[in-house]
Length: 265
Image 1 (spheres, rainbow, N blue to C red):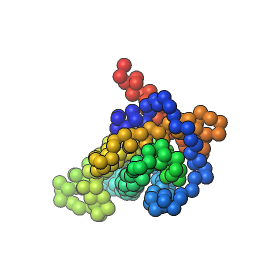
Image 2: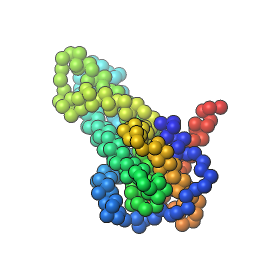
Image 3: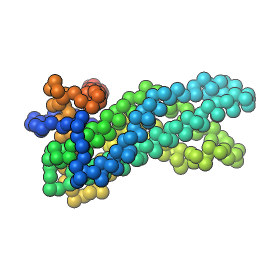
Image 4: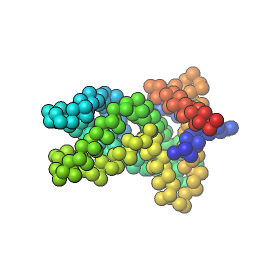
């Protein structure tokens, strides 16, 4: 993931000189099939962010249950509070899988010969807009996740309870919804400080490894060109579009770069 951040934040002397019209970009016939696939995923992104922002957690119930281990009523209250939250966390995780597949399809379209990444972004502006929306969603999701420690606390309590009941040969109904394999994958996902950015990094590395005949520069140039164009647009009065999303993305990316620089000192 560190290499991906380097690509996204590296300085480029000669920025591409073209304008991405994020407000009015419409898919051409050549873009439409991929655009429809990505759009079907992105249409759920706002509800995912709203649901995550509204996530309150079951901290009080869990605390009471831990402090009173022999109180069956409090144990049941905590469990009943956590279970629907785990189902919500599963929805977020499953969306990340859909987004990962969407990103790989998008990269395939924006890096394939005979055009350069710059030419692709200029010619296929509707796909470029969807690329920007994926980056924006990624940063917003991770920001909300980092601000909410209840997510990992709730899931840790869920896993401990499931493990304890498994030792006692008890099967709970929610295991039909979130089985052990799914819980393991979700645990790895939420253990990341920035799980969606990690997903984006993994998707990019998987795309590169699966397309060995494609020069790796096509992929890295696509990422850096996209970021550079957005940076140039933000530096011009008419460049702030997408309801401020790109501005937030630029700030977040630069913040990540500054944090990495400080950590090296």
